Amino acid sequence: MRVLIVEDEKRMAELLKKGLEEENHSATLAYDGPTGLEMAELYEFDAIVLDIMLPGMDGFDVARRLRRNRNQTPILILTARDAVPDVVKGLDVGADDYLTKPFAFDEFLARLRSVSRRGSTPRPTRLQVADLTLDPATHQVFRGNQEIHLTPTEYRLLDFLIRRTGRVVPRNTIIEAVWGFDQEVEENTLDAFVRLLRSKVDRDVKHKLIHTVRGVGYTLRPNSKP
Image 1 (tube, one colour):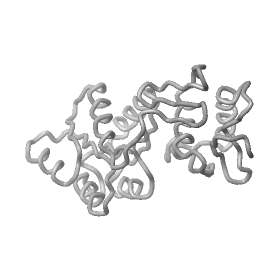
Image 2 (cartoon, rainbow, N blue to C red; image 1 turned 30 degrees about the horizontal axis):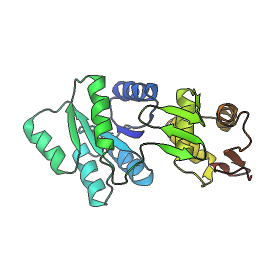
Image 3 (cartoon, rainbow, N blue to C red; image 1 turned 90 degrees about the vertical axis):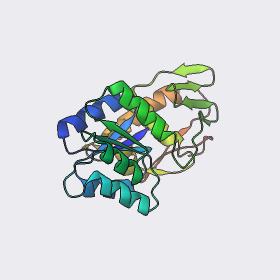
């Protein structure tokens, strides 16, 4: 799951990001309303975690503008404002759920999973290319009958590529999706992780699935043509 967190309390934002990444999700941070709105409109996310009290533009306005622009990405409002009128307003402007601080992280994850299932595009329960399968619910990966054990970063990389099977994905797009927009990641770091992923996914098999497109990026396709 790829999550945009719009939260001006940097410590809270970093804790949420760390917790999500430990659960094999990808998290991107924005610390004010205008930046959060811009990211939500320019990039694809599975869910948005949105605070209300934000610099530049409050969370109500961010949600309202996204819905007005026909952006249906699920929104979970996460805020210290627990008054009933605030809850009602948040849901009325387009949020899918409303969670108040303080909160239990397990409940936060459960609510995030719940709103992400309401996305406008149905998602398959299992992703498959040739004999490679990935189960987003359990984070299990198999090549044929052999289970492949991946690190969290390797899993996010494979998940991102398999959802774009057959498409050539530019290097910068992969880096932003897997590591986040706010992280400085060297391009050779991406190359190193692709090599690690290949050593597990394409090892000792005739048909390779992960391919390099020189000067552009990488692609995952169900045949061995370069």
